[in-house]
Length: 331
Image (cartoon, rainbow, N blue to C red):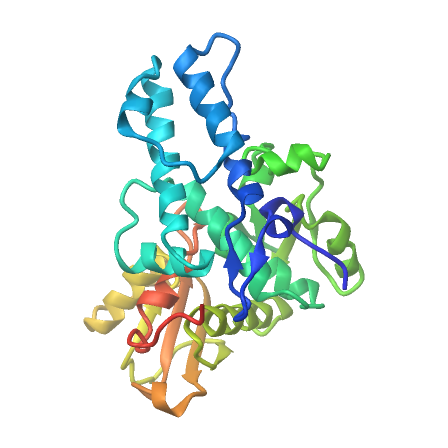
């Protein structure tokens, strides 16, 4: 099977008997390679010493006084955030369990970037063995903001940072370590070029057609199924919908902030005008496969873009918003 998403660092982790990701020293060291933590030449002795000590032992306890001794206030804040995040990972058996705890409890001051990185590596684990590039590209919506546009009647999603010319290098030091070029040419994924995804998966340079009834929406439905199954040990079946009319809205989950807002309006019986309707990027109906988990006939999932056509999916909503919250994580 061809590998993909090397930049997430999945090859630096181990797996337990339940296929959950185990944190290794090598995985923790990737955070120490970030520019926010790598001491520049002018760094103080305390900063250089702390960095060197954690490179030697990434699990080493760090006292508040060690961080307080760092001269630069911004660097002190970076260390506080990183150590708190590291400790969160180490408190749990698996990366999946650490992420689920964060989402169910409180993300606190955890940088959104760190949360996206966790989703990235967890999805790499959940999709291991997947041979469908459309599913893998759809999965990028879980951890990469997308810019949506209508082109010749098709609703296309392209990576926001790639469009902005930033590339993936800012998200992971592994990108530069692996020699992955930051530049990218955007191509719309089709049956003809889909196989090229295997060699360019870390470039995030393929747009996905999310048009109703198309391959992209179906692929996103499959990704949702795999995510829920991996994280909650619940079998679900997700079906893309062309529209949502005359349905009993017993339960809904907004897959992003805008989708939640639209769902709330529908739930409250408010009128949905044409402008709001135009922001809906995808609709899904989710049903449970495990009879013991059934809490409603169907759950409707709403994915929507902002007024400026930006899509920021919140995959944690699937873990905290489904009527299966009493079930434990798979790992």
